[in-house]
Image (cartoon, rainbow, N blue to C red; front, side, top):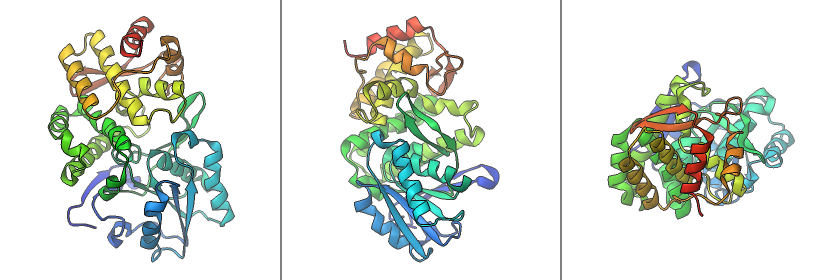
Length: 364
């Protein structure tokens, strides 16, 4: 492990684990020490990330396992489905994987979610390790044990809560990210400010140019602080029965955008960034925050290269998709709203007011 590495712990009693954050982690033997013993390991990656990093990870794991297999999935949110999930099961069954086999998710949020779900299901549960290679995955989807695939009607509606053994965030992998993916990840970094830590939002505002330029020290702080906040939240509420729902700030609107356009048309982070703008507007209409906060936050989202105006789907279609959101209860849509900067609540809102926000925040 490099000398500049950091460690954030997730506290789930006997299922606790560490998030390792730093440079040069992929090749360091100490990164992979003390993981569950097994005869075989499977690296699950995609056809974009695999050619860049799979051989390095395979070489790092070779001293620990007799066999290290690689499963390459097609890249993209549009492949986060049953047929692609079955490619993982086909490989595990074809190679005779047993209950001790360890899976390594090497890629972004889609790879992490699908590998985790496969690990939760195969033989009713095998160990897995998250090795996120996108900013979005490092600060959000790899942490906390949410695993899932999409259904055409709703995003992440089929899945399980299943914790990894370790999360390895090698910041060097962010240097190969396309700029669009970098911006998408910044949306999930920025969400932590309004819901939990306005000082962090102030820091993001002051250091956004450095983050966009992939300054190593700025990225290290952004990833570490994001993981600290998420660890604090999910440590209190693993299965989203209460406070964990605040991590979905912007996601109710964002998931509707993704489902309405077709999964993969907008990146998840792009939809969340725009969704946070819409949620901020709804918070203002309900008298929870002032216009100055909404304007400042919208400008920050725009500076990160993210969309701030939603696609023209129509209020009825937005509301339709929102009713199958996981937070909805008995058909009532629940929104994560900012009740004051740095604090979030989950509550409903009148359909007419939500439709008004949609119409005002989307393309005419």
